[in-house]
Image 1 (cartoon, rainbow, N blue to C red):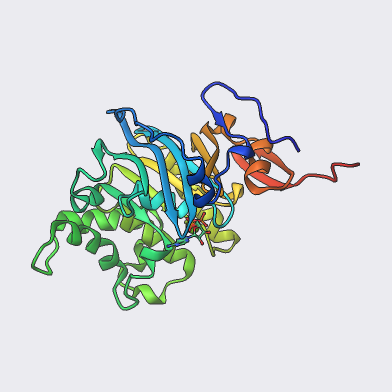
Image 2: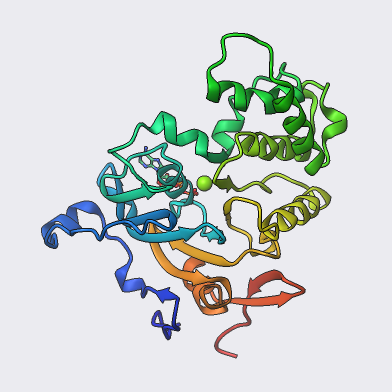
Length: 305
Ligand SMILES: Nc1ncnc2c1ncn2[C@@H]1O[C@H](COP(=O)(O)OP(=O)(O)O)[C@@H](O)[C@H]1O
Ligand SMILES: [Mg+2]
């Protein structure tokens, strides 16, 4: 398979030869330090040349990425591609080794991240692990607001309780409000986690593999709810990480495909997500089908036949 793909307007496709090399090898032929353009004031995320190096390897290599308010992005890539690392940088949880990161108009390194983080809704497996099993579902959602305003009393504002209830209802788990979080099914937990991430009324919502571990019914329910969210003009900018195209909710507008820390393709969904870019991203020949706004992928037939 040729690694070179035609470049369509609005989408950038990077050949495999541009994939990151070990940092030691890269250092030998280190390019001149890059200067970064001023961040786009209208972008909710503006990453330029973002590189994260650990133990001599680039987990992310020279990632450029802009997200605007009305965009809904899906980040696709195999296990270990750097998706969670990218989200950690974009959610102001991790400083890159190199590069410039602007989040909601604030530049990482020049802003108090503790003021920035409440403006970003994040749901991930590592955050979910920290939710106490003996907390009620209502409190799991409410404490997101509680942590932000740093209240000293255990009394929540009525307005917060109303918002928490509405978010639980939006994700179909309002009947579980009094239950202990630890007693919920995986699917119910995922929906509570997303309601929690939305509690602070964030300007951007980032979901790291929200459908992981769900059964078919749970996945389909979540995809439907996320599709409703993605199609809501009042909803925040959305970034959804997955490694299954089947989990892409209708209504997503853009895609960024990552392989070994490097961007394979990025841009409007229909142009960035193709059989060619997906095959390049996952390292095998794939067939990609789309029907009613949903995607399926499977290995393509034997190329020698
Ligand atoms: N602190 C670290 N030190 C070294 N390697 C790491 C560290 N954290 C993550 N990695 C590696 O970085 C790669 C990308 O990880 P990650 O961003 O979690 O990928 P993804 O979410 O796409 O599965 C993986 O190979 C992982 O093992
Ligand atoms: Mg991950």
